[in-house]
Amino acid sequence: MAAPKRINHSGTASHAGVAALSFTTKLPAQADFKKVLLERYQEAIARSRKIGHRVSFRVEVDPAADAQTITPVEEQPIASDGFPVEDTGMPDAELEAALARARARGHKRVAEIVAGEEMLSAEAFARLLGTSRVTVNARRQSGQVLGIDGAKRGFRFPVWQLDKDGRPFKALPGLHAMLGNSAWAVYRFLVSRHGALDGRTGLRALQQGDDASVLAAAEGMARGDFD
Image (cartoon, rainbow, N blue to C red; front, side):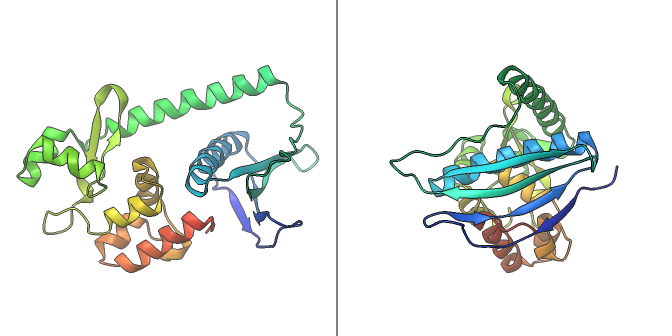
């Protein structure tokens, strides 16, 4: 399946007090659209929590072009006069059903990730580090190690977060701080390719010792930059 084509745009807000970050993602395949819609939804939640403002995006479907677009993302400061609500044209029941299906796919993907061979339990990860389970969980809570919540399986720790000397990457606390202290956000950043890292994944850049570029890329993502 071809990767979605993303076109970046930068601009200023059309009215005072609103910082707008515009982007358009052309998604010719419905499956691509659903995947990116969920990703944008999750990013909007993370950004709104981080900046303390409401975040919105508009979804447009063009049957003539056989494509869908998501544009733009806006950061809106809280105001006493309220916010306009845009009519999506989709009945509430249909929207809820679509979101429920997206959540189900998300839960399935989470289960697949935490069941991977590279994912260790707290006990196994502690043995690898030569420490205790209590210490590992304390370091997870402080962002010194990456542990993602696998629900029924508990927290799982990617073995690849260790450097060549067997120690957690030094950039992990900074990544957690910049990405809203969200372990899943850090995980996605590390396993994804980034234009700001010359197409490398965050993990690959850390393995090459390029901590400064990794932290700069994470800071850009926290600002809402899209690469």
